[in-house]
Amino acid sequence: MIRKTAGFGLSLILATLLFPVLTWAYVGLCCAHCGGNMPLNIPGGGIPETHEFRFKVSQSYMEMGSMRDTTDDISTSSLLGNPATGKFAAVPDEMRMYMTMFGAAYSFTDDFALMIMGNYVRNEMDMKFNTLLTNNSGRDGFTMFSDGFGDTKLLGKLRMYKDDNLAPKMQFSAIFGMSLPTGETDKEFTENPVAGQNGTILPFRMQTSSGTVDPIMGFTFQMIRDPWWMGANIMYEGHWYDNARGYHQGQELWIDGYIMRQVHQRLVLQAQLNYKHEGRYSDEPYEGRVKGHGHTMFNPNNPFTSPLFDPENYGGEKLSLSFGFQVQPFNMHVIEVLATLPIYQNLNGPQLRDSFRIMASYYLELPTKRSRRYVGTKAPKELGF
Amino acid sequence: MKSSALTLKITLLATAFLALTTSLVWAHPQAFEQMGVVAPKTVKPAPDFALTDIHGKPVSLGDFRGKTVLLNFWATWCGACKEELPSMERLYQSLKGKGFEIVAISIDRGNQDRVKKYAREYNLSFPILLDPDQKIRKNYYIMGLPTSYLIDPQGQLRGFVSGARTWDHPLSKEIMMSFKNSSAVVKKSRFDND
Image (cartoon, rainbow over all chains, first blue to last red; front, top):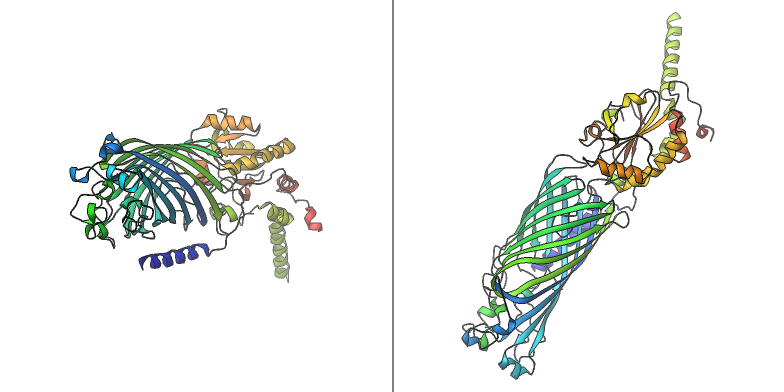
């Protein structure tokens, strides 16, 4: 029901945004946002010019593995064994995540823009079995799989301070919005070689949604010291109540710092320092708590078959370094490529650590007939025009 | 009777004066329109400025009194500015020494070397002034780049241009030259014969 409502709401918003007459006209007028002025991966980055749309499509690939507990790397095999002795029957070895993101933004004024972002995700997680499961299934592991639409973010960015409109040296904005549960929280095993496991619920990370309407709030600080652009973004996504399966995701906090250097009119190099804090999941899903999914012998009182089913084994602190570039091959088109490598990870319990992520984004600017780039700027009446 | 004749004379004089002062626009309405030049509703003096050029030499608007000036605002980070600067240089070369001057004001914030490099790269020979504090830019109410103003030899604002243009276009040259004797009756444009 909530997905249908959210879908209808998003369609309505999109229709409202697309209603103004679009135009491809370009009068050759530049402005502070031309060619992007923030990394596109940071929420609130890539704000369009006033009365213009920006559409974004990006593809990211992320690899996770091996296992880590707090700040110590541990081998998958060291966790395999008899669950009765504190070990696990199945332990993840590596995860690959392919995410296609699509977004649209429209600026209503110089200081206010609305953004909508969705994604389609495909998760693959390689699992290793202990001796017992290997003997029973005739395989030493398998690959868990899930895919589908993720949650949709609806965000507003309100510029609260600027020291100049055309070429601000400093500006400060608030970001606010929500994440709508357009993904799913009931993804199940389909290709598990162990008898009786198919049809049971997949672990948390294989689900494509938080299952809750989550508030998002943050602040962005941007600064320009030509040819350097720099800034910081702090954003919080709350998970305040339980979803339909009786749990909620841990609270999430991101702090991103970035520095960009314009080396050419059409080329900007960038580096970022990204911090993320994520709390633990609040509880097991109903299927685990009541039906015993993810527990030995399907008994909720028995140990977990895999660390993936324990809500305590999620979240932690992560610090990453990202670097890449933005290029504007033609007017109105921006391409960004970004690579991210972790530099510090302190994780809550045994879980897969981040290995690397690469992301390529394509960005299209689309002025409407009300855009300055279509009509030009107004001649000042103060000077007699 | 005498009073009626006086009124008629005053009306005729006023009409002649109005025709003379607005003749620039009337003579070139199509040229203005085709080049996207906005003519002033009320002719006002261009705000004065005193800046230094990229060689450190002080330059003020008063230095160009008696010449038609194309005053252009730009920045090295502006892609659209890059598009029009070569045509601006060609216009400068063709009208140089004919009572015409181009003055380009860079609003780059303190990156003078980059502006110099840019001028060398594009062989720009007209004066390039630096406005790192944006004071002059703000006096001219610049909200986008590039933006240009047309200033007549008497230092009056005669046109506003938002966005990049092909400045060496014949229409552009015609407009620039028409300001040369703006206090005198302007010769009829070829468009008046259309």
